[in-house]
Structures are given as C-alpha cells and as structure tokens.
Image 1: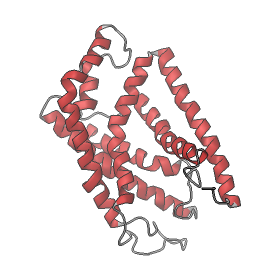
Image 2 (image 1 turned 180 degrees about the vertical axis):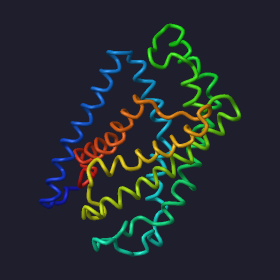
Image 3 (image 1 turned 90 degrees about the vertical axis):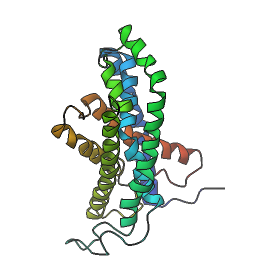
Length: 256
C-alpha cells in the first residue's frame, strides 16, 4: 500500500526524525565505547541491563496509558492563560490511573517475580565475571541483587514493588508534564515534540524512584551517573529509531 503524500510540515519533521535517529544511534555507540575503554564492555552491558530493569515499569505504564485512556480529560476542557488547552483531550483520568494500575504495575511485578525465581541461575553470570575481575564498576554482587531482586528477600522484593509503583506513576505524571509543555509551545496533539516527547516520562520516573533513596538509603539507591546518562540516551533512541525504521520499511506513514 503506497504511503500518503506528506505535508510540508510532515516532510520537515521526517528529516528531523532521520537525523535524530542517526544522532542517537551514534550516542549509544559513543557511550558504549567510552565505558568499554575506561572500564570494560561488560560494565556497559551491566549498565544497560540495570537501566532496563529500572525503567521498564515506566515504559510499560507510558504505553498502557494510551491503551486504557479515554473518557473525561484531566483538564476538564479548561484552557491556560495563553488561551490553549492545559493538557488536551488525550490526557484522561482513566489513562493516568488505570494505565499504571491495571497494566504497568501488574506486568512489572510479574516480570520481577520471574526474575526472583530465576535468580539462582542468573546470579552465576555476574558472579563468574566478578571472580574473574571482568567488571571495573559493578564488581560487587549487591548491584545485581538490587536491580534484579531488590536485595534480601522479603524486604528486597518489597522495595522492588515500591520502585515499580513510583516508576510507573512517575512516568505517567512526566507524560502529563510533556503534554503541558506541548500545549504551551502550541504543538498539536499527535504532532512530534522531539526529544521532550520521549524524555518527559523517563526524567520523572528517575526523580520519583530516587525520592525514597533519601529517606531509606539502606533500601533504595539513586541511579548512578552511568545509568542516568544511558537512560537519557536510550529512552528517546528506542522510540525515534524504532519509528524511523518502521517508516523506512513502509510500516508507518510518518516516523513518529
């Protein structure tokens, strides 16, 4: 099926998408090379895995908000002082509450339950690397315990559940902040708001999950600088590159 003719604005955004896809792919490569050179490539793999385990509840919840959305908009149709909608019709109470609660949190808990069951087998991989001095940054098993199973059972798994809830709703609120900014810059609903669209939920997920670390530092950790950098690169990369590839492959009319 042939693609529809793009408008001039869409053509402009398509060029931006292609450039951003290349840019973020290069950033991932640079991040990998820097950590591999100064530490080890295994440390980068550990950062990558830890980052995914950290942010996956936010990814799922952010997508779920679209699935279970609909109904009454959060802003109730009200406008801001600039005369534009505060959030828009697509941001609803149903999506905000049910997305994380019905989909993001349950799926994430299920995932970590699976990791808990598989942990006796998983732990052999980092233990072997640690014994052979393959890691320079993550050379202690506590890192792997924290991100895979939360630490010692049962308090460790309780901390996992708290992290999941905070990450899920942090991502949901971050999405609302992104929508608020789109309206302020007069970006139409559904139109791309490059990088902000992809980073808003990740930034707020990081912030929310970091809160208990300042209250209970023995149970919760703030993501380290390597994870934060990779998350800020990886999150927009996944969306932009995937959509661009889908567009080039003829699966989407536009790369966003």
